[in-house]
Length: 303
Image 1 (cartoon, helix red, strand yellow):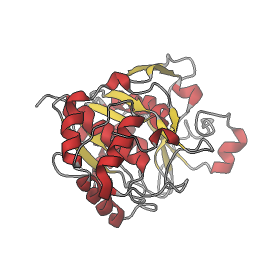
Image 2 (cartoon, one colour):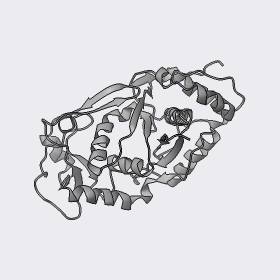
Image 3 (cartoon, rainbow, N blue to C red):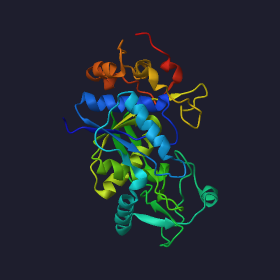
Image 4 (tube, rainbow, N blue to C red):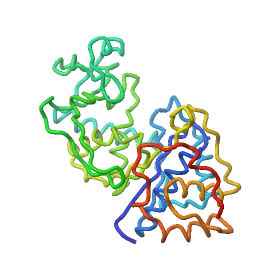
């Protein structure tokens, strides 16, 4: 085995759909092609939306597709102490602050950002503490240099964190930890070296790199795949009513995903046989360099 460790980290809010399988298959093949390990993590940090029953269903679907993982499955809802430790480290270093601003208050004085209004810094110097606060990470100054990284699929990326995102939440007012903190701590604790996931998370990567640097964690290598979108240009997801996969015909499903990823398809008799052929043939350079692709690229190929 090499030092490569990849991962697939679904949110158990429903069964896998084909967009999820694309990410799972790509990260699995990339890890196995490099003779590395492939881990699975359940990102159920938002316990208001997740259900353990769906986590079990996802693992059964992966197993039916012969996407076998290494080691125990990590579950975010069981790791609150690790996130609290990381937050305490950041608080001790002066990198976070308590905030009691409402969404309306932020929207009234904020400028538009990449994915939401940029927090205007209202509470940054207030020194607030106590229950009922959100904890935000300081994004730096407007004249700070951008965070740059080279994505293995999408190429060179730059983001001015203070201007484009602003001070972002690490722990919500309801006491739940935010995705950005949890994913960074989890990647570190699982010793993840390579992250291959959908390009809908491309804009989150500089936030995670910033957190890695502040916590003294080793960086990951990132690869962001095109996401499948419907006729309205919406990402296939549970929110856009993407249907659950039928793992009974795993060969056809996996071949559809391979075609979407620009890879050869295989006239195999089983999912295990297909994967044995696909692993050595995997070519990351053949993946389309786009943030999204129409779902009609997922039409059933003829082997």
